[in-house]
Length: 512
Image 1 (tube, one colour):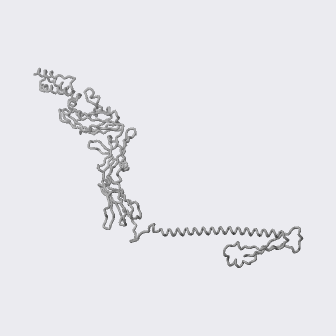
Image 2: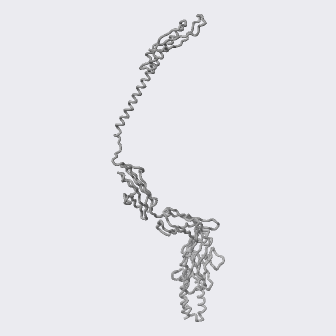
Image 3: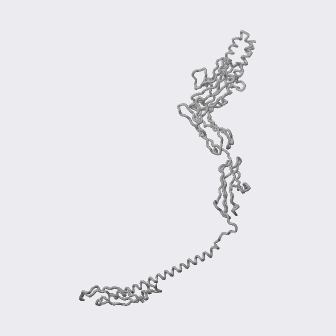
């Protein structure tokens, strides 16, 4: 039997080119007859050597994990498949694992270590790709397992991140002799230079007035040890809070509950986030969202044109205006009567002809949409009222009076013209008479100067100077004598007498 055992082992040679899973399977298969033959002292040494080789390969070749992770992996980790971080900041990696039963059992009483690998695990580069080992004091990457591995908590803090840390990572548990890699559970980490914009969430989708809603502005918080700061215009004095999510990640939030009104429609919410990073160079991002709120009609008003006191036969236009969301579905016009409001028209524009005073009164409109309605203020229409049986005067009624007035005006104009002509004629005759009188006097003076100082009397007839009937006073003065004193200058050669004084020349004028 010893020879058969040797031949059976020799029939399963191990090749270095075989994959770790095939190599491990071959060793395990070849180990079974060896174990049964270990009772023989001749084969004891060979069995010990084979077991040592198997253990060595199980440590460094990661048997079964990569070949068929769904069937062979004995450890699984629970962590987000993809995570993002900001350069200059840190990343909290939530992580827990489960150890499936296998050849070896996980024992929490034994020392447990964790190892993070990056990229693909192979025999050639397995140790080179190990970027962190909790058993080592110095590691390639600034990572630190903050969870309790004995309690199967592998949460890790990745600090001082740069874009070069973007990669795929695997986790390995070392709880000797239980050693396993979660080859099926990869973690993809992406490190960005630019921050993420915050997100705005509203608790209700269809916003309506009088509705109470909760508005939240949230920001990713990959590094809860140095959370971002949020500010917004909805409530400037709000303070942000950092909360842990169900998957172990963190989020920083601002939250405000408001009761919506029509004034919130079109309101623009602005939220900004500031991430602190190494070196004091904060990174900021902003997002905005405009509210769309539905509301019943608002600012409903009615107008009338023309306004004031109106007469029969005038066309009147009534206009109703309002704003609403959704838009106004109907406008209705009412008139107040003794029997109550009366529906008189539909539509935002109402036009009618004022036939009589019954068209006057109070009018108003009602605007409606799916959310409600609103009534406008009353507009008053006033119509002029005529007395019973009274007919207003027309233009033809004034024609006789106009003719009389025009005739009187023409007569007055004729009289004024005749009077002016007579006055002008009288003025001309007076000037002529004065000219004749002056000429007569001048002649008399000249004759007197030629004579020896004698007094001469001349008679002048003024009967033709005064046309028309004379007054009573003129009739009394017809026979009066009019004297004119004339001074006669004596000649130089004439002797002077003592009694010679200023001689006077009198002219007697007899009026006819």
